[in-house]
Image (cartoon, rainbow, N blue to C red; front, side):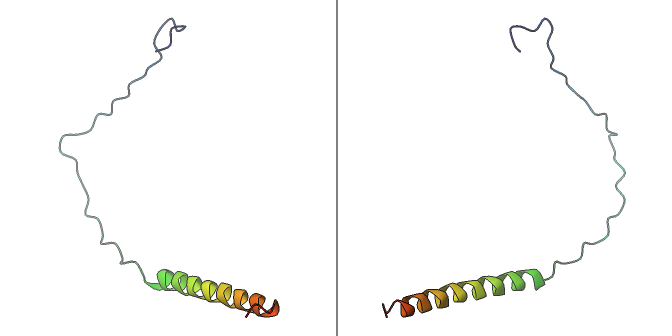
Length: 65
């Protein structure tokens, strides 16, 4: 605690829970689809190919190749 405080400001919260919690049956979660991962992978591949192609054409325009 800080020296300027006249009384401590620390608060402790306690939650009372039953000893035998009643857990309802949870339905099975659906399996995640592969679609978003494939979409992301294709986007990365297309981006890398575009960067490589752009670099090639810039170098070709400057007659470095």
